[in-house]
Image 1 (cartoon, rainbow, N blue to C red):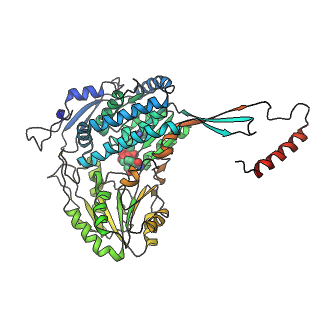
Image 2: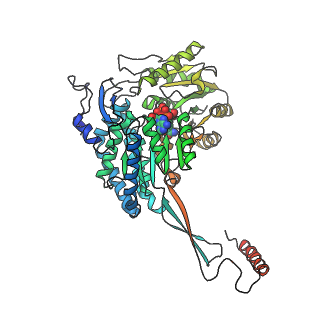
Image 3: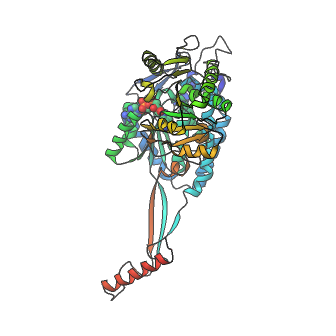
Length: 529
Ligand code: NAD
């Protein structure tokens, strides 16, 4: 499929474009009456027009939710092993369709190809993991009842119904596929509203689910702005999985609260990478480049505070700065670039504003700091600042771009204090040769994931364990047991045998209470749970 997309770097006569026929094929199943018009996207790589897309109105979203609800009734009755087999086929198709998926992710987000590949790998890992693990996690569980042997309790895991997923633009494939997989495996239908700037990738993901055998109608992709399209998903779904900024997350949570439906929120961060005195500096320098500049820093778990122990600061920082100044930047659809473009003019403006604000208040630019229109209209150099203070916006606000500030600390305790001195609590990393001490330091950082000797990919990719935010970085978790079970309702069905939970015929209340009191003492004595 990659041949529908041309790459000017290898074919100078070409422009970045997606064949309109391919766009029509991808959008064919989007429910959009046309009442809210259409939307036009451009690629951040060159600024060229990318696609004309239909818009789903609030009414269209209601229709999509109803259609998913109908398909969900039958899907919930299929054995979970059948659903898992679909996800294993999704795994294979994701890997097989890489060329087109990588092109689409790059064209929509502007990121480098290797960063787009992280998304393909992530989705495949999630598909394999949950396909293998869901049957056991979703199995009915027998529990000891109130009267042992006589009360038999069974816990069932029912799907929520229709899960609404609302996601931003920074990880077009991951955010389309990796939350959808566990929601579907749990027996739900899904209505996904991707950011407009991630629409084609989300539709290509939906096409893969369909080819893998997902029933018609079960997964609906609706397109359009956050309001009304995203808001309509929030207003109609039985459970909401929202990824985005903390400010929008709070608003979406209020909507969910009014309807009393469950919600998980994956929100912003201000993540610290701590280089301890005994760190392997060669590994830490390379790791810092990945931690700070992957997807041009438009990654919720990327590091924006680089905290370095004074014992190694004067060696680490110059090595890091030198390495950053040599990074290969490109807007090409080929491998080999270390950083691509920012995704939008708003992102570019925000990054440059944070740099300007810090510099005007006395921060020093160690490398980078400039826009690079010679490479791409939205490219900003990977930038390292020193001397950042709390008077500067980039000390505490999430920049969400290729901007990192370095801080000198004199102890692990001071590093932990700085890492925790933020409203956010998403991700952190600790770099040390002493893994036991590293785990101890990590345990004192208030973040949902902490990586040792890797910036983010270790914890993110270890999908058997949960990830998500503490404090203002979110509610709930993706990945792990919780990342599947949040899409279910627990139901307790208990049968009572032979006698009721009441005095036997002719027995007084008092005798019943006395008998039950004795029985409770025995149950404790025999260590019953
Ligand atoms: P944003 O909050 O502005 O928007 C997120 C999405 O919500 C957008 O697609 C937007 O159109 C939509 N939206 C806006 N109003 C809405 C409403 N009323 N109802 C439903 N949807 C609505 O965030 P953004 O700037 O697009 O994305 C970047 C943010 O996302 C950063 O803060 C980043 O840290 C965060 N993020 C977090 C994670 C995570 O896993 N924690 C992952 C990726 C991005």
